Each structure stands twice: as structure tokens, then as C-alpha cells.
Amino acid sequence: MDELLLACSGITHGPFTVPSFTLRRGGDLCLHIPDHLRDEEERWLVRCLSGEISVPGLDVRARVEEAPFAVQPAGLRGLFSRPSIAAWLRRNARVDGREVEAIVARLPDGGRPVKSMTEVGRLPGTLRAFLGLEAAWARGAEVVIYTTAGLDPSGRETVYAAVAARLPQCAAIHLSHRYITQDRRERDHLPGASCVEIVDRREHRLTA
Image (cartoon, rainbow, N blue to C red; front, side, top):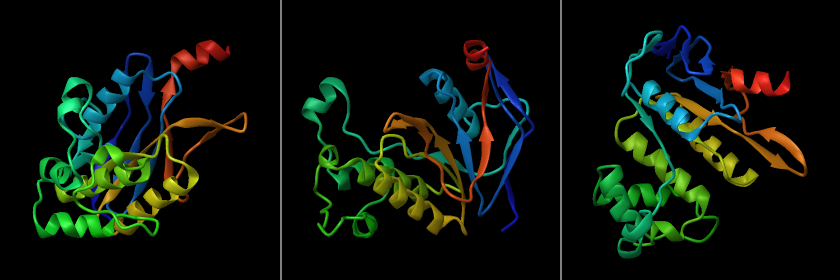
């Protein structure tokens, strides 16, 4: 339970800095993404956290997998390739047969059963997020990197529950983004998670 999976003594990349933190098995870290962090900067950070890029100050000791939402291929590919849940899982989770059906059976269906041949592009965001998590765990993730950006409150709670159920066996990093609701800026956050605030010097200049 106390096994150290990831340790950061602080890393800086351009205008942003990630403070020090540790993540142990069973732990959930809420990483607060600044409003002005660019997509390519967030991608760089995810690649570092997953061990794909080695940087001083970050010690990755476990298998870290990102869990992006399941999506239909973009552009022209998407016109000719509309993968079913089963096809998407075979490609992204590297599972087949009974394992596919077991994952489909765990999907939160809201009272309307989902079939393995349903097209991924027809699924709501909550189910696509859930598939992303299941694929990461099927690939052997000891730490899963996930987000709830774009989900409604019910969807966020569903994803949080799925992550919490796995925490005894693994750990999780939640990429937490701000969103606007009823003219208020709020941030999605798993209750009880340890929070780490990424410092972006661009935001300080804008508010100074």
C-alpha cells in the first residue's frame, strides 16, 4: 500500500513549474492545470509523467498509462473507420473475446445496456472516459492519468467512482481543469485527493 510509484522534486519547463510531490500505491493526485497551459505543454507533461520523456527531478518507478477518452479517428480516417467498442478495445486495450465482453459489462449504462458492436463515436462522454480508463488498466497501468474535462456532474462522479474502486491496486493522477458554470469558474476535483498546483508565470503576469 505504501509503495512509492512516482516522485517529483520539482520540474520547470518554459513558463510553468510543477512543485514537488510523491505518489504511492492507493493514492490519488489532483494536478491543477493552469488556464493558460497550452495543449503541447500539457502533452509534454503527460509524456514526462508516463516516463516517455526523462527529466531531472522526476522519478517514475511504475508503469504509468494515460487514459484519454475513446474517440473515433479524426479527419478523413473517421469517414471510413468507425470502430465498434470491441474493435477499439482490441486496438487500445490489447484484449479480445471474453475480456472485451467483461469490460463492456462493466460500462455504466444508465439502464440501457451497451453492446460491444456499438460504435465508439455514438457513445456519450462518460462511457468514452470509462473505456479510456479500462484500456489503461488492461495495459497494466500501476498509475493512470485521467481527466474529467467536458463531463457533466453525473459523469464526473461516475469516473471518480471507477477510479476510487481501483485505488487499492494502483494510483491515479487527475488532470484537473477549470470550467465555467452559472458564470462561476470552478475546478473538477476528486474529494480526498492530494492537490498539486502547477505554477504558470504567464498567469501571474496577467493578474499583476
